[in-house]
Length: 174
Image 1: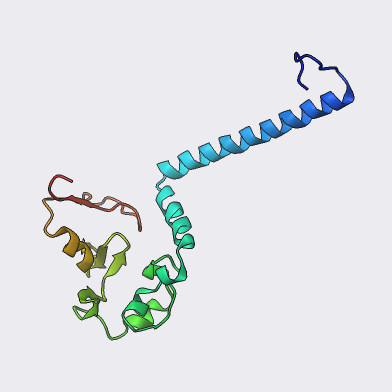
Image 2 (image 1 turned 90 degrees about the vertical axis):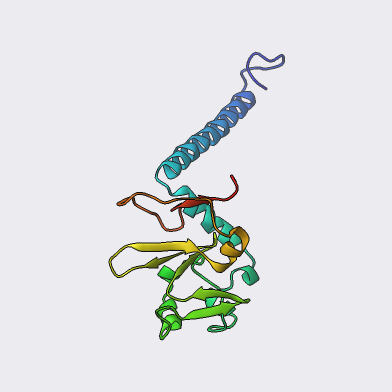
């Protein structure tokens, strides 16, 4: 069916087939190239991780998307619609009323103070009055890791992106 192949003739049927074939190959190549350019852009601008997490979150079963306030009993059966990002939740301030300072919720025998924002990577951040951020491991992360050997935090003035890598630690060389 292609020029140069035994049996090919410049008939309408063969020309039409080659035209359609080349159009489809060209369209697939264009889509692949656009996808590569966009993926490179997303990786270089730091948008790849939030995109990946959004897709991963959508694939979770409802039982795996329970809101942290459902786990504490404040909002039974509540499913998180915000990919576990309490900062954008309209209802989060209602759940936190009267729970500021160092008051803590007990969840499965572990302490989770309500004034902190928790990350799915077992870390938290607590905004401070002077505009700085206090960071740490949540109770589950601390139970798994203990005291880290090395902690690397970004320098003063470094931009930290929500749900991105903000700091890292090492234990026993791992």
